[in-house]
Length: 278
Ligand SMILES: Nc1ncnc2c1ncn2[C@@H]1O[C@H](COP(=O)(O)OP(=O)(O)OP(=O)(O)O)[C@@H](O)[C@H]1O
Image (cartoon, rainbow, N blue to C red; front, side):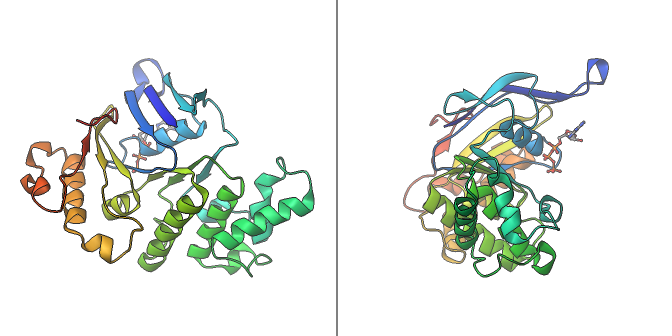
């Protein structure tokens, strides 16, 4: 559904040009959650901006169901880390969620209904008339998620969405994201620094490393669904995947745990950087 084809991106020009990534390839299937992980500064947010159509790559394409994305697209919604800056403090919860619908749904009643449904879906029913500053950080991020899903996107992009909330709220928002994907069937791409989170949320973890960055591995996550914060994270395969992702991020590929295929019912599926089974 989402295809990243030979994507190259750099900042600056001439001798000052800094190449962030070159000829990057990756795919995300319909209804799949993929997490992008990698060292700080590797280019994860830059890649997300290209996928969102907010930055123009210097070469290559991003396509959504075959259509080239070269500007913001109505079927792609973005949730950023900093809910404090992405919500409008002078608008109520309902006003914030309604905002992007103004250009899409002409009828005010229908617009409010769509926004109210999204607010209910993120568990904020009853808070419609409050302002962002009257809500906790986790609730504000729920408003940002409601605003994103109110548009019924085919692709939801989340850039370190839970980095600014406490651990308990983070776990709740992870489960909310999994539930929304289940209900709405959209594809989701998440940038996260939290390796446990990347495995818990993902169908696939995409590891970026290097300068220019490369997709050094794409790991299928064959953990049962629905996921559970305690049961899933207690699985031996969860610990194996965590070790594997950490090794990949650190560039210790040769040191990846040898027990991978010995624990659990099935060996972990390994896919190549193009997403093909290796
Ligand atoms: N607008 C810009 N102009 C010039 N350089 C930039 C710009 N945005 C990002 N960079 C540089 O591009 C590189 C990749 O940045 P990016 O924010 O994409 O990395 P990241 O992997 O998301 O980092 P982090 O995990 O720390 O958020 C960094 O060296 C950064 O300094």
